[in-house]
Image 1 (tube, helix red, strand yellow):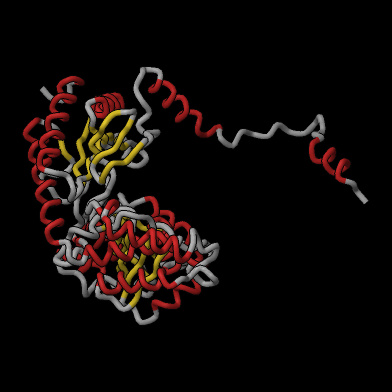
Image 2 (cartoon, helix red, strand yellow; image 1 turned 90 degrees about the vertical axis):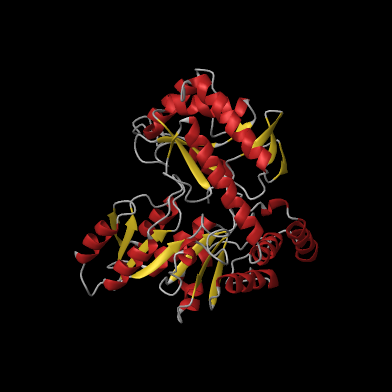
Length: 420
């Protein structure tokens, strides 16, 4: 019988002729070198910012400085809503800090069902499933709906979670050019008529903030016998009469089979979901791996989500103010001479396009030093060769804050040479 000492010796001894193990991280050496060269110029790391203190949905302390937040996706400003916070505190007291279990075992509490009921009321659907993250919602629903022998037809600019859902499900992936109705039509026409097909669209695309031509795309997908999933992560809360998303605003509610979304944006917490009227929808709870094999959200999180969703049903004033903010900022930046990702304000996302990474980082740091935080985006999050500063507005941004933001862009842009 082998004792512990002998076993340890066997595990640590390496034969002299053993091959040298390749470094599995070596493939990232070019990225490491690029990052080190960038930081050697004295700029801060745009991807290592620490929020030392968050004061409100629109303000925080960063590097010891009072900073306006313009890169948080906190579209409807629900993170500090008193009723939302109180709901989370009460659930924490009554149900504890976590479930320690999957939704299909011990991980479904009363709060999870209440959150799903809130989603069904918000979207006017028969069914709702809550996931632990928005990423898992796409990963789970897409991989479960379309498997081997099926086809997923998706926009080339789709979010990483959509692509990962395709790969997990082992379906055939067909890309079409970004927001091209004609290319979608051509590619669907080439597929076998009898094959299962799922067209995946996004209401708002997160990099440029542009909106999909959903009515035309939905019509094409239906003509070719495809089911449709629409990701409304960046549209929920402020598009449409009820805030359901772009598909509601553009009159496509009756034709979308599945709507996926997240709690980490307009809802102001964390989690993901899928809603649908499909009569067989509930079977997904038994076969969707990212739902079955992960722990459920803590009771405090689903309580905050449910409270927020119910309030968003009656947030017309917030929606109107957010749209006003978006249009004002878009016009202000365009008047300064910046190149923007869309010709007009299409969503709460405004992308400031820059020609290279050095200028993008310089502009980003110039804004941070003046007290404004935005997101810097670069490949692979953006298409090859595309560098941008992504601004995401909040319904809680005050008019004077929007004025300050425009002034900061003007000063930083002139300092680094982006504008005259």
